[in-house]
Image (cartoon, rainbow, N blue to C red; front, side, top):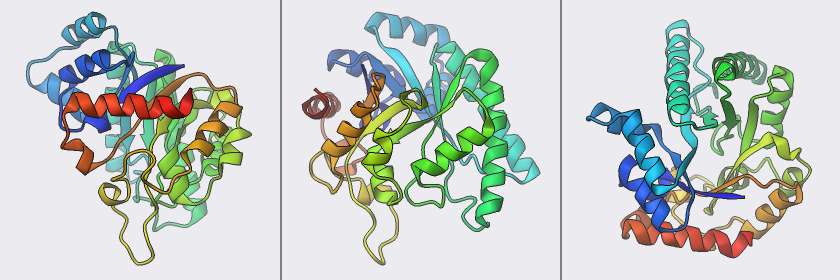
Length: 274
């Protein structure tokens, strides 16, 4: 088991500081956001310098999160998607990071189920092929407020693709709030298809309420509606022993001291998983 600080949890920080925070609060990994990584590189940073900091703090990059809107399918938009995939895979190679997260948002929700699946299958297969020569794997995150929001849907597409570098991340909030997945389904999974776990709480949108992650996820572990213990037990039932990352998408908590945020993330997750 490897514990990895999630870049979302320390949203108002930079890529350099996140390594130090992770090291000083008990984590041996960092799930980094492209926004933070690319900003560092665009303002004088380098991969070589960042690797030195990773070594200094004994922190691995466990995942780059994320390549978004993977349902882009119009010719120009799809070309941009694949270019972004090349860029993020190169970043993963430079940082010796084994996994990149990929996710669809609402770009396909207006299409029929058959059309959505055809586009997603074609795109995830193309993305998998980009990463394969570099040994990069891709964890699909199904997003609660989209039409592509159930674990089984992702597993079906992975099976159809025939690609051996596609898996899923078990994100407690997305699976709970999406409403199409139960802990029992997770417990029956092949552990080799779980590339990561996002430990988090929150609630689904209320009737008539617009989806807004900064509202529905603004909860520390134990404050929301997610049955965290049940999801943890489900993951453990598979025999999974990989990366666990506490994702605290919480504007209220983001205003705390960064080190305190990370310590609380570490302590809260440990209460449940050990």
